[in-house]
Length: 203
Ligand code: MD3
Ligand code: FE
Image (tube, rainbow, N blue to C red; front, side, top):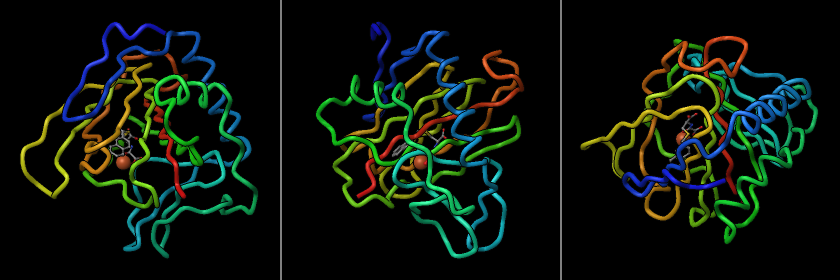
């Protein structure tokens, strides 16, 4: 698809509306298939507090967090393998980061209208030279981008349904989070909220 509006903020490459409506709807169907095989989980931190997002995964590894801490696991807690990463999702990766290794994990984050994700770094992956690619579906989300170190100045950007963000190079280590969802800004999903797919190389 044409990248008539790719923009760069602090090393994050935002491909605005990279996916058209039909492509977004197809991905929602793929997510439903993933959730049938590997139901959404309530992530719990080591301290026992529930996160507001619901999570599941596809691929060789899924990212989970529970009272034992956060980590990549080769199976869903039910004991089943994570389903394969859908072909359409792999196509997005190949299209935008052809030089990278293939992703081993597709984390599915489901944000209901009140859900958030606090500022954090992604650093559970062995090879930090590999990019991370994220796909937004559904309602708009206010994405906040910080620095490699904690604190300091941040910048915020609204992510829309169909946007794809590539985090490579120095952006890979930046703190980031989702401050809020704006319900009612998309009718892609049956209910208000947002789904984010995050593709990563884990090993
Ligand atoms: C920057 N997810 O699951 S996607 C996460 O919208 C996560 O669900 C958010 O942060 C979400 O870890 C943000 C954008 C994103 C994903 C991975 C990154 C930004 C990133 C990895 C490194 C740096
Ligand atoms: Fe993250």
